[in-house]
Length: 296
Image (cartoon, rainbow, N blue to C red; front, side, top):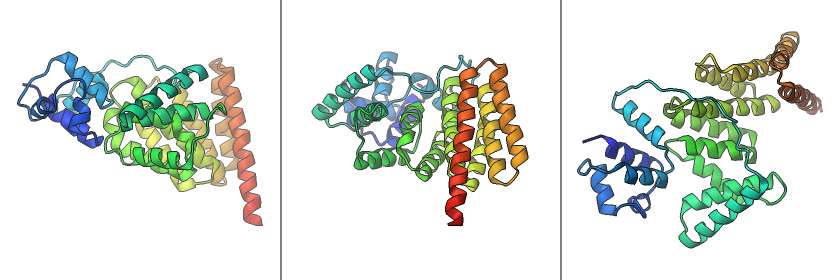
């Protein structure tokens, strides 16, 4: 007998999913209840489909089960892929329509959340408008997650632009608090987790929120524990430069920023060098505007 039932129950309840919705189209509600109480075994195929119902990958599930019961195993990290979803506009439109129809016929929260995720993607191309009540729903949905798995992190990555700077900071802290135990599942999960922290740190730097920026930098350093995180380390080096500038250490800040941009050039990442040069200019512009406002 495994401990999978107990782990499944913990994740299901943490995500606020009922027995009925978790069991839907896979097993009966009574069978799932027995499985969660360790009174019934389950075949892999059905467990896999149950995990789909609660938005948890098999990899995450096995990792959490091992961790919560003291069975630590080595993990093999796959190469990091692109951090941000690269769906085409047409694909987003198709997914948006699909999830909307599913939501209309089932009234299930899962479909509504995914519909809004695609709607945000469409908004970035000026093809949709996300309403304030929808933004509020998404903020509350993520803020109230007791366990953040890769699904929640990826969702947040794709909609972070919706929120105010401080809302982003609060959600990122929720992610760190409620998702830290899943970041070691594989390299992609770590990279996504770190992407959110660094992205939020940039937002804090742009908006002159120094104490929050310091906290995020410390969290990023704690999350970087693999020698192959060259991109993330370089971005963190750049962000520390922005912090130094906000602290009045202007020459040190310029040196840090220049070093980071040079690394991207050395790596023959001309587009990244261009991107971070643009971010430095954006930071400077926003910093000077805030100084003018304070004087007035």
